[in-house]
Length: 113
Image (cartoon, rainbow, N blue to C red; front, side):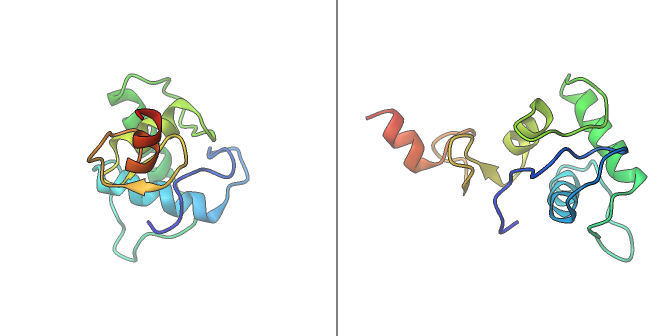
């Protein structure tokens, strides 16, 4: 993911969703084994498997199982924290999780200096 991992709007079955949000979440869920990439590839269109993946993730991480991801919500934050592509919870930049799973090295250093 080259774009920042931050939802633009709520992702749910009954919502108008942002295609970039759909792609980002599908890729993150795929990396963690919660979304199987179809033979035609990952698309920016929401599908039932996306929401099943969100629900499975929520269940495994003891979050409210509702199939929703809200900007700055608990599911978005946990997915970012568990993703192989760590995202700083302060500045939303991607990082390798070397200093912290929650903060990039710049924010971590600023907070601890």
